[in-house]
Image (cartoon, rainbow, N blue to C red):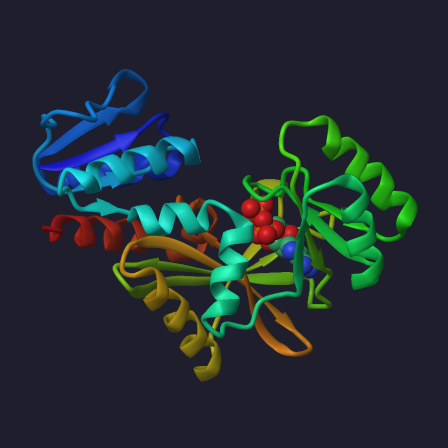
Length: 274
Ligand SMILES: Nc1ncnc2c1ncn2[C@@H]1O[C@H](COP(=O)(O)OP(=O)(O)O)[C@@H](O)[C@H]1O
Ligand SMILES: [Mg+2]
């Protein structure tokens, strides 16, 4: 029995569930919202679990608790924990010798402004947790820094993830890893703005990775271990630089060029989990 944990069914979840059902795989569909987890007793769950919650926090809880009960989860707690936070991801990549953009995390508005001055504009501000390009801002001078950081001051989290703006072509690279293998690699071109999130309306093209790029991607994949992840990278003047790892990777955009191959890779991988 394969447990499929979700909290809402987006396009990706629908595709994978359909494929698994077409392949006659026994599925236990669990809506995390309706399914409290017993921390101090046995869980009524058998077999491995794939966790695809929209809420990163739910995935974090589910992976930790299921793993504690000896259940294999995709992705692992380690992956959800590190990839779910851009500061942890950057720190982890750097520690392991992966080229990643220069980044600082500050913990107050004023030290964030100072850190940006020290880094040199333009800088990119990102919420440490979040996706779809939300609240990510390109800061060009100290006036803008003050505006953006003052606004961030008013929202819950008092951390300021500040990254050097990477000069690159108007595209980035998204690689979808399934079970430690490259399932798809695409270029994502920015739509109107500078961000390349497809959610914001960019276009997609198949990416052909060179030997060095492939090596970097495989090294990142090995650091996280097999699972279903997305690795985002940019082609900078100083070479390939990895800026994000996605632990609930979307592949609707990539499927525009890869068809149902990614869904099939995922189903095939999940079928053979033990
Ligand atoms: N340091 C940077 N320099 C230039 N562009 C960036 C930088 N960081 C992010 N971007 C652009 O913004 C997009 C979103 O950033 P990312 O870190 O992937 O966050 P998320 O996908 O979680 O919103 C990237 O795909 C890329 O196009
Ligand atoms: Mg991204």
